[in-house]
Each structure stands twice: as structure tokens, then as C-alpha cells.
Length: 416
Image 1 (cartoon, rainbow, N blue to C red):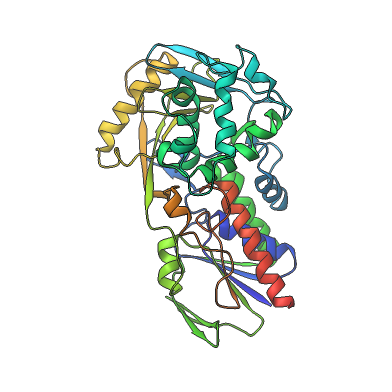
Image 2: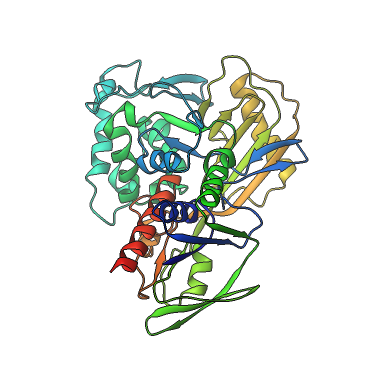
């Protein structure tokens, strides 16, 4: 058996590493000049530093993340974060600052401690999260949870906006509940925030490429798949820009491209067709001493501030309202929030703005229903990607899970 994995984002890397580790001969082809997809790092001459295209947060309870990092031999300190579940917040409307501190275990006694929960809320207010977990299929977050409360404004809205990359009230309650169920509902041990210590590439991409090559896999960058030929209910030929590749009887194909590419390659495959933007800003300014590694802002344009040793980065989710603004205007607007939040000079440091217009599919009920299964109608073709039906919104955890599912399906089919 030989496996052809098309697309070297995290889903494709996950599928390729999974199969190569099981002894399968893997050829990974990527149209771009670098692997990683939307989880990539690069040297930016404007700021004269290596930056990530965006800021990606994972949680300590993300089992697929932990498994993948172990499989690729990532450094033990590849992810950084606090020892406990601690989340810093600032409400720019009144200057209130607080720390959300869930307790370690699954029994949520923290909601009864005023110093641990969101200020202005009562313990009973948090029953709304239970309503989210019990919401019927097909309901939105706004239908499952009251949206006119302090808890909504100061906790549910900012957290779900980031998790879904969608206006929270319009988001799928099923997908939002999946996030809560796998993190906060399990307690603080599963909810500790983790970010790439050095860069996304150093954590998630470079070790995977090295592992594939060590296991004999071939990595072909700058290689675009133009079409797939089918016959007898299976893929028989891959038509790359540099020539055709015949697919043997025992060979398998994993399509791990963005959805709009997959639907061109695979006739009749359903996929999400509405997407939301993310805007990221990177500023070459050392954060002040004592600044939190992660800070959620409420009431401004910036939603999350990430502080690193040498820079400050920010993220705005569901940012379609911002993507058409000039980069210069965005840089000044976002820095104004950062300067206020961290008590820094308003003078703009060296900066870079990264816009991802189609960062993720829109996590609405309607778009979730368009997500396809891993298995396709072709016996030797599987799908992978955060847009495939993983039960999660478009997250790193979901992308990695989809790669494992596609790899296992491919290998099971080959054995069968």
C-alpha cells in the first residue's frame, strides 16, 4: 500500500504521520511552497522576525494535540502555559480586570467563589452553560443561552467568538457545547491554555516533516493537484501539474485540502461554503513585566492579546467587518487597545497585519450540516480537514482528529 496525502496543513500532516508511523509508504503533496496551511510561520522583513500567520490556542485537554506532538517528537516544552487554568480579562468599558480560575476537577465549585468567577455574575447564572450542553440539535447558541446577561458579555460571547470564529449568537449550539464538554466541563486540568512557545512551525510543522522524512515518506512542496480520474468507484489517477500518477489497486488517497479545493477535485462532495475572517496583528514590542501571557479584552476591537518574549500579538475573530480596512488603519486601531490594556506608549512600534479572509468555515447550524464524513463514495479516497465532520468547530484539535480518522480509514480499507 502507498498513501497519497494531498495537502500539508495540520490535517494532512496528521494523516501522513499516522500512516508513516504504521509502516505505510506516504507521499505528501502540497500546492504551496511550505507546509502548515493556516498554521504556519515565516520570516517577515517588515518586523525583521519570524512570526506566525495567526495566534492559535489549544487546551491541555486536547487529546489529539497531545498525541500528535508525541508522535512527531515535538519538544516537551513546545507548548507554554500556566500550571493551572487561569484566564485574564479586561473590560475596557469600565476598566475592570479579573481572573477566571476554574478548579482542577470536574465538579465546578469555582462558580460559588466570587474571586474565581466572572465579576457581576452569580453562581446560578452559570446554569446557562448547562443549557448549552443540553441544547437540541439544530439550535443556535443564542437560542440555547440568554444573550442579555453579564455572563454572556463577559464570558460566553468572547470565548465562543474565538472558539467558533463566528458571531456567537448565530453559532451552532452543538459545536459550542462540544468545546465546553471537552474543556470546562472536565475541569481546570483539561482547560489550561497552551500556546506555541517559539512558533507554530517549530511546534506543529517542522517536527512532523522531519518525522515523515525519517520514516521514509516523501514530502513534495509546490506540487498542485489539478484533477483526479475515477473509474469503477475508485480513484485511478492523480493529475499533478508536473505529471500524472497512477493509483495502484491497494493504494489510498487522503484529500486534506481546503473545502473549496476538495469540492473541485471530488464531484458531488458537500462542504461548507461560507467562511469567516480572522485578523491578526504582530507588534515588535516587548511586553511589560508581569503582563499575562493571554489577555481577553472586552469592549474594544482587539479580542485576545498574546504576549511573547520579543513581541505582542493580537487576534480578532469573526472579523469580516475589518478585513477591508487598510493595514495601516488596522495596525493603529489594534495597537490603541493594546497600549491601553498593557499601559504602554501609544507610539506605534514595528508591526505586521495578517488577514485571513477565509480563515474557517462559518460555524452555524446550516454550515455544520454541510460538512462531509471522512468516508467518500470512492473506495480508496478519504477526507481530512477541520471542515470535515469532526464534531468540533474549525480548531487544531479537530484538524488533527480528522487526519487520524482518515488515516485509519485508509489503512483499514487497505487491509480489508
